[in-house]
Image 1 (cartoon, rainbow, N blue to C red):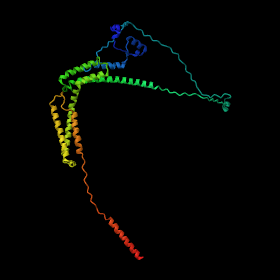
Image 2: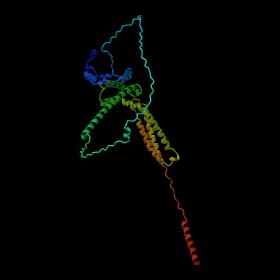
Image 3: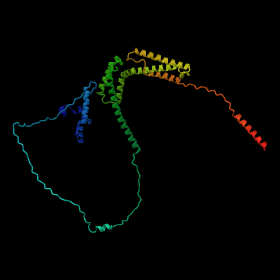
Image 4: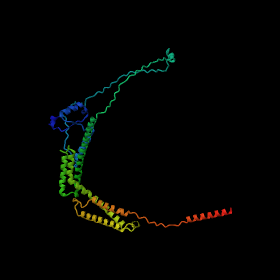
Length: 383
């Protein structure tokens, strides 16, 4: 097959085996010894169809780029088929064969069950069963018992544990490497499709051409020499693309985030100023100095956001923004944390003045004692 294809063993990159006969160990050993390469068995009949359809879709799609390859189905030896045509006017004869079968005569037989009579001596044997006494002989002796454990030596256990951890780390590195590769590939496709779409106004025209070129170069590298490399190389390649791409994405996301943060800040300013200048009874106990401090702080925050919004409106979208949503959220948190304790200050409890109340209990008690003594003295005079 190699001679017919004009190839040598050294020119073969990989050998894929399919079919049921490839499960024979001897056959696999012969093929591997001939090509001097490890055999690949990643395709079975079901997976081959699914993978082929996926690759065909990727080749037809303008979005994805796959490595160019071709499949050639070749028959090594020619196939020749010959037959003699049947004349159309030739008479045919139909031959039928008949076989004579013998008739089996059936007979009717009546069956009945009868009990067998017991043999002579069986009845007597059943009445008087024979018994036999068996003497048990017990011998006692001392046995040597040796206790041992089947556990491994501590040094061997430690060595095996280290090997297991190495295998776990190796498997994790393989998974992390594939994830890093997929992350880079996903970033290339996603970002390149948005350069002329969602990110169009947020990338400097001077950097756009270079950025697109870097994305294309990274894609070509990924399907060529970067197809099988290390995790750190994929991460470094992604970091190179982030130099231009990350600020573009941040500027795109900040447009909506700044608008939402500015709206929330203005709502908080209006609410706090309305409470600080309110004449309601629940705020009457708060000193005017503290209310004025809230109004002053809210006014400064309002002036700050108005200046930032005006400055941002005069800038290009691909320029560094005049302010960020994080700065706006910090301004809002500052005024809320400052004003909330003041506005939620509880009312002081009213001072209750207690007035002493005279109780005539002691006087009544004294009078009752005097009357009792007077009555007792009268009784003594009568006696």
